[in-house]
Length: 113
Length: 112
Image (cartoon, rainbow over all chains, first blue to last red; front, side, top):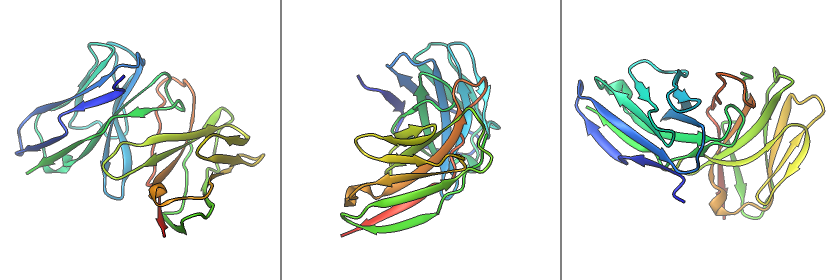
């Protein structure tokens, strides 16, 4: 039981490049989330999903797109990376939305130059 | 979503009990209070959750007064390995479109 895994762990992009971050969970959770964490800012919700085929915007969705084609996977895409998107990205999943225990992945450290 | 306020940092020594208080003046009737712990280079980890009075598990206790406008996470006999950032969150369960908003957290430093 791997829990929540994220791919890749590290990535360096040039401004304007695109990439996709993959999140996978093996707990059969309905709800999945993408957060970004910046120094002194805590975690901020980018997008989330309440089930396969659904997505919704969080607190800071601009510049990102997401897809949930399979229940166990939640993809975060950056179409045209900007230096402001340099951050650590965390994926999480839970069996309920809101105040249900969220299980977090190990994070992806992204640097945009 | 209810806004939370917690101290930015706290210091302690090994073996002491640490209490981190979070204020949430506009907590709603159906909101739960949840605490997460985060170590450097790791994702947050769920510690404890409660609705009212006191909740205890193998790692911590959560004290919630009757008015629920604040809550206190209690860590008994901390060790160096408890050095981490602790987040207090308030939110309802299964409210459509609801997701947790993490604040800046409390950085706990434990010294020997």
